[in-house]
Amino acid sequence: GNGMAWRSTSTGYETDWVSDMLRIDVHLHMYPRAADGRHWKTGYEIWEYGPHQEVAGSPDDGTAEQASAALARGGFAHAVALNLFVIDMQRRQFEASLPPQTDPAGRAAALAEFEHSIGDRYVGHNRWLMDAVAGRPEITGFPAADPWALPPDRNVAHLREMAERGARGIKIHPVLQRFEVADPRMRPVYAACSELGFAVLSHTGPAHPGQPSATPADFAPVLRDFPGLTVILAHLGGAAWRSTLQVARAFPNAAFDLCEIIDWAGAPGAPTPLELAGLVRDIGPDRVLLGSDYPWYEPAHSAELVEDLPLLSRAEKDAILGENAARILRLPV
Image 1 (cartoon, rainbow, N blue to C red):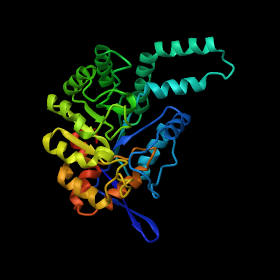
Image 2: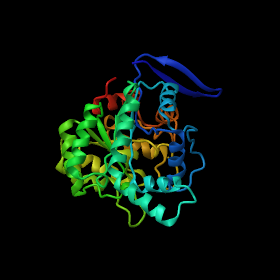
Image 3: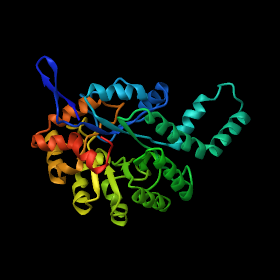
Image 4: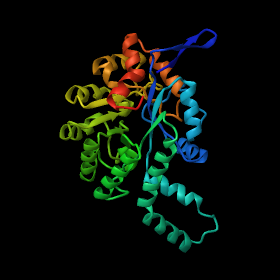
């Protein structure tokens, strides 16, 4: 497909059309309303890399319309929209929406009703995503999976419904969702993903003490027990990036995206651009995918950061920018 090449010049951006370049963003988030996106962007703390002065964020809130426009700005042929369902954040958002004059009994009743409705909210959230991308052939949906929201058998039935609606994978965030990667309740979900040809894209990185961990090493049991399952470890392991290569070498079914960590390159807990490029080289540039983590960052800028990486050849950068994603995730491009 046609893609736009962005080059930084002394005068800013210069664009030209390159007929054989395919750009795919495998890590993008969308929200039903701008207010939801703002709630997430203000409520999600990126702490693991330490301070960094020069991280360029996206001004967007992540509505479906904004997401499509951001992809077009960067010359992207396709993207994967990842749903995340975090009961704790849903509960906080629900509590914040209650009228301030609600008395304690009314508040308790409302919260009890919320707890009772979690499964329905989760299913509704995922149906919203698949409806939102149904009219956008440039975006593939990866619904959320959460072992707390539904029991395993109902989660598997829900996945099958999502597959019928065009989903091609799931998104998990073990730290925020408070479950261990190898949680027994997730085994039937991983097995169903393997059977359906779904990829599992997961947040990876260290956690605060007491939270479930999602370092690359935590995925070893799942990668070992489900060798046919495609697992995408986001952020190249995040601030646990020094342990990523060992997992990559042990498990050929693991692939990686470099969203966020590439924006934080040079921060105390992140690799330098040279170290990042070396890690990509060592893992194999055919196993690393471009992600932006939009609306936190801008897809066009994430692609530009890949273009700027040292060590990698033009062909290796083209693979990262889109060819790997098309092949590994079997996307309709």
